[in-house]
Length: 443
Image (cartoon, rainbow, N blue to C red; front, side, top):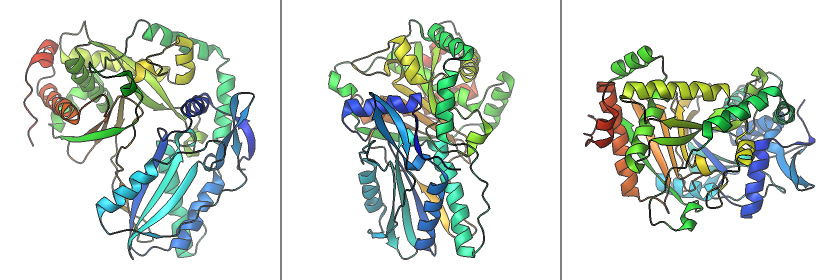
């Protein structure tokens, strides 16, 4: 049964609520996801299908109420969205301009709603479904789950059959309640002590010199995209030898790129990990992602292979201790930098195995995820890598008040050059990799 009424907020939600209270409302944690729909679209069926998905899950219907200075989740009985087609020019630039406007939407966490949807119409058979949510109620897996259920409900409507969906076994409110209980457990204490030891004495990545303090809090962002065409067979062999994953390899590459940029060899990088430990939560929507700090100190490593071994150990330890909430950890550590609570975590890394791709729903509708422009940033630098049909694709999002685009383009070129060099010679000396001019990877 879908939840309604009041429930405790999770630690992560409380942190985002406090940030929102401090900032007086901001688009920093606005999530935009959009899909191009090509074919014969039944708009009423799509609207009904989306509302059925929302009715199954409490997260899209959630807002927050202030109870004695702390937030509590309020799950409304109902939230209905209306998809009235909005005509736009049949041009990518016009569509992205409209999407950027939505990405700058500032939510009122108390009044809500914290989930909205709209429909752009390029032509009779070409639409764009855009949805916006506050991060406090949604994460990336929630988006995938929403689209999976939307496909099923829409197909059922257009084919006149009953949707094949299982009842939702658990909701985000269940997770939030269980989290508060877990924080009183011995396991929680052990994880806290692990992170205390791991992050003791760590320092943040130094920002470029000469930037004013205000540059650290601006949310204006940009992104540089790049491709990495590498010898996938040689990379696979290296990963097998070292029992490493592509995530670990790319994390090691990022460490080297940042070391070249900053001159630092002891760097903490933040990376999101899902906290859906209960199998039932795999089918629940909400803000389950926790950010962990991956501290990599390469001072003692002579070769790239040695660094990769170190990164593997760091990542495995983080997986074992990923449940301790970032907001709680930072409060315990008393970590601050220029008024920002995330001091050590201003550089991010994410890796995805499956890139966004076009697909055809059973009803014949072609659905393709749209890459939305990064107009706001949540960290100084954010590296993302996805596997592609051949090689890998990447992007570096950056705070424009801290970094110039030309500088980030050079950083991206170094990243691709390091991938090529280390796959070709995994026993390369780190000192050489950090000092030599890197030839661009072949195309």
